[in-house]
Length: 287
Image 1 (cartoon, rainbow, N blue to C red):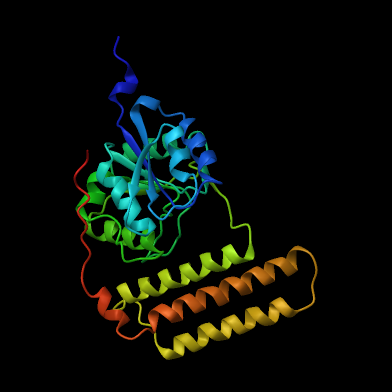
Image 2: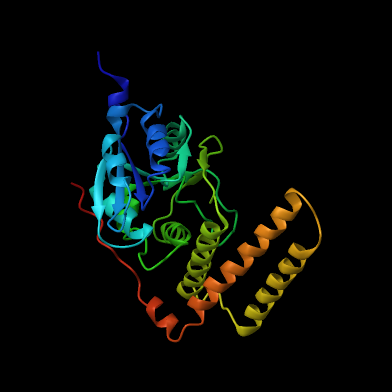
C-alpha cells in the first residue's frame, strides 16, 4: 500500500546560529518533534565561523545538517542554507526560537492549498512593506532562488526587504497562519537588549537607503524622531513602580538604541552609494 505521506513535499528548515549554545538545543528539539513526517523534512543549521561556544557540537548531536559558514551575518547564513536545501519549501526560524509541534504542518497546509508564494505566522500589516518575520516563515525554494535570496548587505531588516522583493518580482498568494506559532526568547540583559536594538536601528537605516526613492528621510524627519526619543526619556523618568516603570525604561532604551544605530548608518558619508545596485546572490545549487 502506498504511503500517503510519500506524496507530500519535502521541507527544509534553515536556522542561522552564532554563539547559540544556550538556546539552540531547545530549538532543535522542537524541530525534531514536529508533527510533519521526519522523512520529509530536514533541518539545516548554518553556524557562523566566529562561533566560540558549543553551537556546532549541539547541532551535530541533534542530527541536523550542519554547515560552517565563513561569511558574517544572518542573511548570508540563510542564503547558504537555501543553497544546500533539498526541500520544495524552505522554512526559516532562529536559534533562540521554539516552534510549536504543528508549526511546519500548519504552514505547509496553507502553502500547498494556495500553491502561492508562501506563508508565515505573525506578520506586519503595512500596505507597502508587509513583513514576514524570518523566525516564522515558509517560502517556495524556486521563488527564493529567482530573486537571489536575502540581500546580504543588511544587518537586520533583511526579511522585510526579501518579502518586498518577492511580492513585487514573483507575486502569488501569501497567507497569515495564526496557528503557526513560534515562541521567541527575549534578551535576558539590558546590554544584550541594547545591542539588539542598535542593530535593528542599523537595519532600519539600510532599509531606508535601499528604498530611498519611496522612503525619503530628511533632517526634519530626524529631528522629529529625536523628539520622540526625548519624550520616551521623560516618561521613563516619571516616578512609577512595578511593570509600568520597567516598560517605560525598556521603551526608552529601545528608542534611543535604534536611533543611535540609524544615525550611525544613514547619515554616514556616501552611505547611499552602496545601495544603488540590485543584489543577486547565487543560491541555486542544491546539493
